[in-house]
Length: 269
Image 1 (cartoon, rainbow, N blue to C red):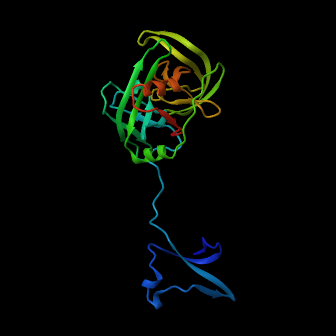
Image 2: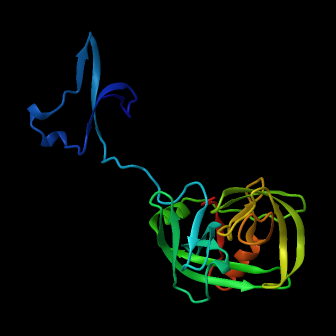
C-alpha cells in the first residue's frame, strides 16, 4: 500500500507483514529495497508489522446503561462503576440484589449476543429507611475483563446536591436516556409496602417515565456530577414520579461497611 512513514513522516511504499525479521537474519536476495524509483521519483520502502485484525465490538453497550440481575427475581441498572481500595465494583440498588446473602453471581445483559453474561459476585448490600434519608445500595465485585478495563480508564465523579427545579439526566436499562426535574426535597412518603420512606429527592420524569429495570440508574446534573440514584417509581412501568437517594449517601453508607472509600467512576453512563 502507499502509506506514510512514522519517523520521519514521509510518503512511502509500505509493506504490511505479520512479523518483522531483522535485516541481518535475511539473505540479501530476500531483503526489500530501501527505495524504488518511479517516473523519475525516489520512493522509500517501509515495512510495518500489523497484528491480526479483529472486530472491535464490545460485549456491553458503551456508552450506555448496562442492565444487571442477580437471580431471576429482579433486574436493575448499573448506575456507576466504583473504585474501592484498588478493586472495582458496580453500583446498583440494594433491592436489585434479592437477599442479603453475598457471593451470588451477578449477570449483565449483552445486546450483541442477546444473553445474560456473568460479571462478578454480589459483595455488599444495604437497605435502611433512616430518618435522614433512605439507603438502598449494593456493590457487585467485578470479574468481567471488559468492565474492569472500563473502570481502570475512567475518571472519578464529583458529587452534586439536588436543588428544587434542577434539570437532571440519567441512563436507564429499560428505555435509555431519561430527563427529570427535581420536584421535592426531604420528602416523607407513606407506602403500604415500604412503610414510611424518608426520601432525599422526588424527581418528575419526562415521558415515557421510568420502568422496572431502571433501579440503580444515576441522575447527573448539567455539569456531569452524580446527584442521586433512582430507587422507586409508581409501579413497574411508565412512572412519571420517582424517588431517589443521594449518590453521596450511597457511597458514604457503603464506605462505612467496607475498608476504603467508595469512589464513583464516570462510566458506564
